[in-house]
Amino acid sequence: MAKIIAVASNNEKGLDSQVSAHFGRCPYYTLVEIEEGEIKKVTSLQNPYYFTHGEPGQVPEFIKKQGAEVVITGGMGPRAIGFFDKLGIKVATGASGNVAEAVDSYLKGNLKDKGPCP
Image 1 (cartoon, rainbow, N blue to C red):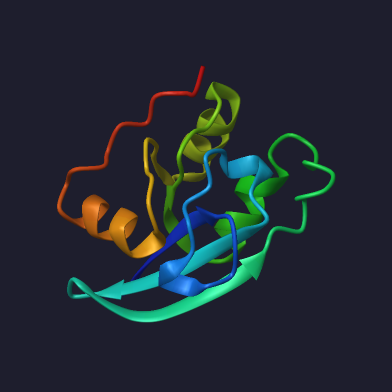
Image 2 (image 1 turned 60 degrees about the vertical axis):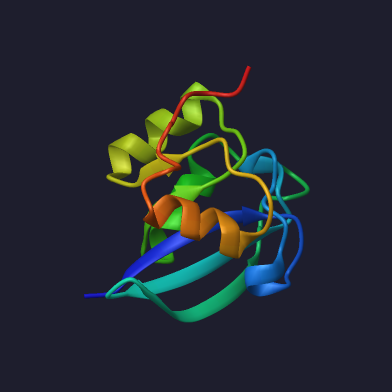
C-alpha cells in the first residue's frame, strides 16, 4: 500500500528541492509517494496559501486533501502540529537538505521529532 509524504519545499525541483525551514511559509510542497520502501512518484504543488498564510487550519486541510499521511519540514509551530494531529497526519520536524535526503532520513527512523519551532 502506498504512503504519501508531503515535504515543505523552497522550490519545485522534486527530490532535489530544498526543504523549507517553516512549513506554512514554503512556496511548494513536494509529494513523495512511497510503496514498499521505494519512491514511486514525485509531484510538486504550489502552496495556495504562500502569500496569505491562509486561515488557521487551511494548510493542514490542503495537505490532507492531497492524501498525505506524513508532513516533513524544518520547523512548525505548536498550533499547526495540533491541526495535523487532529487530521491524523504525522509530523516530522528538524529536516534539512533536499527532499530526497529528508525522506530517506524519515524512512530510516532518523527524523521523527515533532517539536515546535521556537
